[in-house]
Image (cartoon, rainbow, N blue to C red; front, top):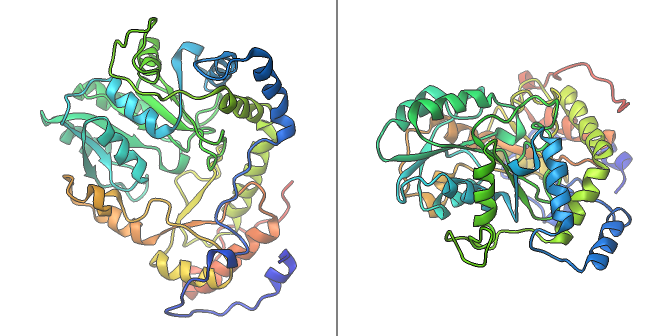
Length: 403
């Protein structure tokens, strides 16, 4: 169905108890990943053929590690490439050697992979609430809790790529003696050279999954200003080998292949074009969404991400159901909090009032670099029409020009 037909549809004001249609009946999907084309990747594939080196830190992997380091204003030795951000979080926590079985302070309002990584690292998630404005834990509260002797580590999540002040968490780590690992899965662009967030002393983990703003299919990167720690993580990702065939640590197979590196290198070649498309969609949404819809902190301010999670003035299930009747896809990216997942329901936690509120009101809107201005306008117009009358005012009087 073309955009004109979408825009011509009549939009009812409100309905109740609407069943969501089948996923194949959605015209505007919530996500549509786009990786480099075959044409862009092919030169790197030919290098693989010529090198006959397919994995185990091959030349393409080395080049990718170097180029990503430059992208984040880091040296080659400060970057460890891994097969997923979840693996990266697990190995980063393990590399800091907290006491096995100790608790790890972390937000409940995050993707379940964060809790999975903590568990896989041999720690127990201890869930804390988030601030309504920053969407992340309060540093003073975390610091107070971290002084308990059975706290082994702290995991802080960068909310949907929004920039945070990492020096604050460096200071918390220094004062408490607890390592802080930053789950910056969606912050590839936020951390770029000249971007709004700068890597500090705490270990940072970035996702390079296909759904992220810069993707390689599967993959992740761990970045540390301590080259010895980064090398330790690389060793953990290659079975614990450190310069020999003798395992010095209890490691895993967490490497990436040369084929994954080929996709990453091709993606870096076209990153300027890719970022421009993400930025255009970001700016349009920023201007057209109703003012009553809460955007991620600092959304649209010199950084791009691949998702748009917003906080609605009412329960997201109601909004999602109505949007679905207009063939607009949505998703609850973080669900209602890790503490509501059966696997983590028995984990210790603080009171979580804001997590519970945001978990019920957060909704992921369609967001992809291929969205047209007409599609964005249709989503925003539909959303305005299903919100209460007092919540419909646009954020800004915006132009629809992507230029």
